[in-house]
Amino acid sequence: MRQKVKQLADMLAESKKTVALTGAGISTESGIPDFRSPGGLWSKVDPDLAFSKETFIYRPEVFYRMGFPHLHGMTGARPNKAHYVLARLQASGLLSRVITQNVDSLHQKAGSTGVLELHGHLRSATCMKCGNRIDWDSLVEAVLAGQIPARCAKCRGVYKPDAVFFGDNLPADFESAVQEARNSELMLVIGSSLEVAPANFLPRLCPRAAIINLDPTKMDDTAEVVIHAGSGEVFAALEEELEFRGLMG
Ligand code: CNA
View (cartoon, rainbow, N blue to C red):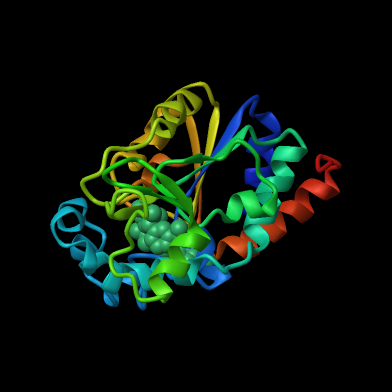
């Protein structure tokens, strides 16, 4: 792995503009299960039911009983080494910004700025009827008080978390991510199976890519460097290498 980390450091040093694309795998070391690993969310809930926009419209209680507890469980997590090193890379001018598929806000908690969130977030929820927005803690309070589904005090419409469900349109951040990928020389893909479209299309827009993922991905053969290891370990080694070269601010 040491040799590949050195290669990664070379690529970062050479690149005029680098972006990172992260997935659920970067947050497993923070205690949040991903989708597809053994023991991941897909072994516990049926995401097509729990996180489906269509089901939510007709039977919102299905999400509130099956999906909500998993989302609620994410919100107390703390960033791990990989999140912190990415924030430090950005502060050192080696990374333009992070594009994430995650909804856990751990990049922001680690200090990354201008994070593009392809699948929304868990900081708020919006009333499906009148558009009133409440913060996440207020939503949790309503649900823990037994309000299933959580309803708007103004119009009795149902609150939906501001995370993207299956069947939802992608937020405007996706278009910004396309531009960011097109304008970059290098993309670091971290902790993503690259199974979910259209996010998995982004690495193809960038001339060079490096993949850091525990398991092989379908796009491994398109990347210049592929490291199959935990992201915490890889980013700790990368930080050390870049510090040694005097490139970390
Ligand atoms: P995924 O399809 O579950 O893939 C995760 C990948 O990460 C797998 O290929 C694992 O091998 C790999 N992995 C697991 N642990 C590590 C680790 N420590 N270091 C490096 N790699 C690791 O998840 P994707 O993000 O590719 O799929 C996209 C979905 C998952 C998006 O819609 C997300 O919103 C959704 N999701 C997000 C979260 C979160 O916000 N933390 C959690 C669960 C699911």
